[in-house]
Image (cartoon, rainbow over all chains, first blue to last red):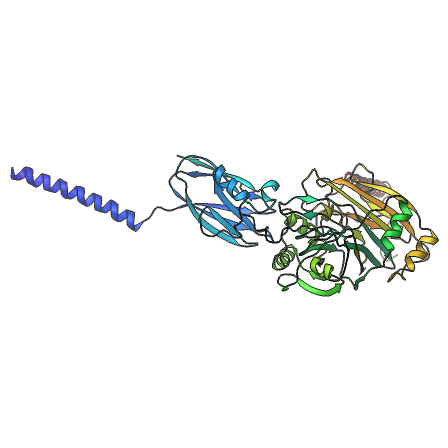
Length: 140
Length: 357
């Protein structure tokens, strides 16, 4: 009986210790975001298609080499439709909607919740029609 | 989202075959298109005189007040630093139109902008002509882009590539800011043009054409009339074949009557007593117009591929087949010569004299 109790206590202790270790590791080492570098040159995204894992933070490092401002807005069709007629002069409140001034670099981290495809588009006047459209392929 | 909504629009267009960046309202640019609030470009036929005499290029173009309010502007790439920017003659462009198309009488268009700081590009010269504020800028594509942004202009998405295209050859631009409210205040009526005369000492006269397509979709039409007045018949690159988007509408010795009329206009006393008048009509799609018009009026018949934008300065020019064949021919001659010398040397050994003879 005593032996059983000792084993049970030991097992419980190990389980608690393992859980604590896992929790501690999680706190000490937050999940590293995936880093995707994007360049904007001559009003085009490069690369124009990126693949990212679902549920993992993805840091986009976007460098605008052009002498004009650009936008990087990622989302579904409804998001883009809203921006086509929007009126915000600058985007800096949401990680999925940022403005990259001429000759600068901006970083933003996005976690995609579900697999599928989303587009990233510059919605400045004429830029989408010019071809400033890219695709994010979100995979499991 | 749309920032642009603030002023409306910006576009680069040419006024003399130059460029214009436009914002706002309804005024029309002499040499270019206007970018609408939705980014659409309205193409306009424009007229420009590019004359070259005694190592000096003269651009004469006009900015026309088309009504409305606010400000808009244009930026024009230039082949060199102007020695003078002044009000142009009153009838020069109209007289040229009459000389080559007695029936047609196209209007001239113009554009504008808003004054401000001088970040980015260096402001070399500022001149105000009527409701136009003209600034000669020196700088690369980035400098011009920053200057434009600081002055409230929104450049279209093809501007980075187009500005690089020009800045690689000449980092001089003319920005024209047109204040439509001021024009109204001055009593200018819709259709009133402000002629501008830009004097540019240069060895390489060229007329910017590609800028006319700025902000336009590939299938959109670009139309403009470019008048060239040179001492002799010029060689042009590209040759205006009609199939390549530019057409030769007139090429003949300039009449004494025309030259006398032009010379009697304001600031036109430099017009020579003889000359050659060429009219090149631009009738192209925006996608096709990826070049400028290089002019060689020296008689050598060699317009520059760099000035036309076909080759960028410093680009490695590939050796052509003709040059390679010439090289091989030269090497073959050398080889045959060496073999011949060797054979002669063997057949006729040297007859040496005895030492101390």
